[in-house]
Image 1: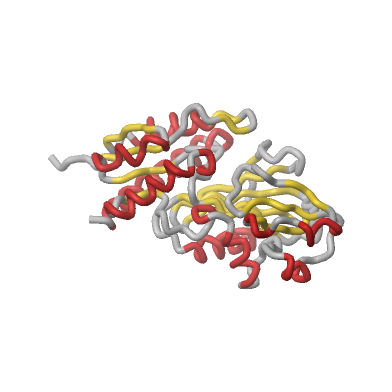
Image 2: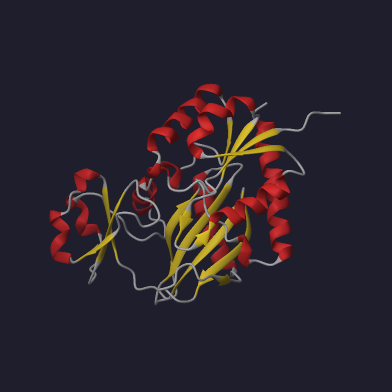
Length: 277
């Protein structure tokens, strides 16, 4: 009988985010993934020390890595040195590598909220009553603040700051992918209540919008969440491309959708492990 793959599942079961219990999602996922893998859970601070005993590492709801930067860098260095399969892979071009992608996508003409990181490029931003300033290595709105037009030139861009116009959008919507396949979409009808999500039926144009960013990211096997906002004119603009440890809000979708997601994730992890052999 063939040995089952051994997977180290990285999560912080004690992490809290605006009243949401991320741990419930990981308890559910691990309960289902155990049917396919020999699985153990660990805190992100312990991953580098434990990973050598496993065939691969799945990084899930482990919290913003800015909370443990040294441990995360040690984990990344160890995984690269050992050639360890990490899911999602460490070469993602989205939030996996900070928010540089917002600048890259702006330069490439993608439908993204225009973003700059130096005073010399402020002319590239559209006029707005208010602007958003946030750190390039930020997460979960940590360090985010709103500034007026007269404050833009004096911001500390040398500290790794990004600036965007504040978009008065109609709603935010998230598209959830396993590999290159969209699994479901959720949206927040009230812009002031970002995490009060409801099921959303994407149009063909919505699907094409989200797929462009997934294809740009070139992640072969992994989970991605494409966050966008709907402008008053009806267009979608990218807010975030989360490919490190996106929260999936699986408790808000129906049982059939959850089952389909788990099946897709299971096969995706299997494929990632197989590719590394």
